[in-house]
Image 1: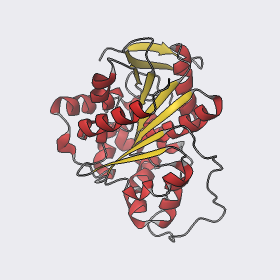
Image 2: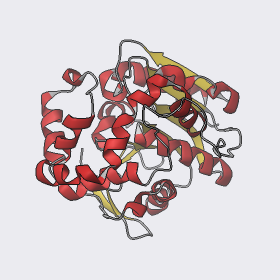
Image 3: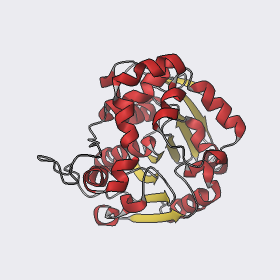
Length: 300
C-alpha cells in the first residue's frame, strides 16, 4: 500500500495510507504494538471502494517521526495526532477504528470526538476500555499475569538488550507470542526488519513508559490500590462496535464485561478460535462485523 508523508500542525510527520473516494465517509485505522498500518491490510482492501480509508504508521513507528523522549508519547499527544491528521487531510468527521494500542487510543479519540462532534462511530478490536482495564489489573489474576510484559517494557534495565538486538530481543524475553504461525511469512519478515530500527524500538516502548496504567507485580495484593478511582468519563454515546477475539492470551474477554453499561449504542461481536491479532487472523469475521455495523449506523 502506497504511503504519503503528512506533516501535522505539531511538526510530527506520519507516513500514511490514504485510499478510496475522497468524498466518501472516512475510516481512520490505528494499528497496535508492535505492528504498522499493515495490521489493517485486509480491511482497507475490503472497504476502500466505498470509504476513504486512512491508516498511519503512528508516532514512533517505522518511518514516521520517532521522538525519543518518553513524555512525547503521553495519551493526550497520541490522541491529538489523530485529530491533527484529520485536519491535515481536510477531514471534518470520521469513524475511528483501532486495535490493541491503536484501540486504546481510539477509545480516547471516541470520547474526545464525542465532545467536539467529529467522531461519528467507533470500531475497536481487542483493546481494553480505560474504565475497565485498570480495575482488572488490580483484581484479576489472569489479566495481571498476562500484563507483566509491560513491566519489562518499562524497565530501563532492558535497554541494553534493545540496543544490542533491537526490539526482537526484548520481545523474545518478555512476550509469549500469540498464535504467531497465523502471520504470512512475508509480513513476518517485514516486521522483523522494522524491529531492527533502534529509534523505532524505543519509540514503541515509550508508548508503555508514558502510559499512566499501573501494572502491579504478582506479589502485590489483589485489591484496588489506595487512592485509585475510575477515570471520570461520561457515557460514550457514539455508536460503538467492539470486536473481541476470545483466545487472546494478553487480554481475556473479561475486558468486555461492563462495556454495555457505559456505552449507549454498543455492539459486541466475539470471534472464537482466534488470538489477539484479529484484524489479520480472522479478517472475514472482522469485515463482516464492520459491514453490518457501518450499514446500520450509516448517516443519512
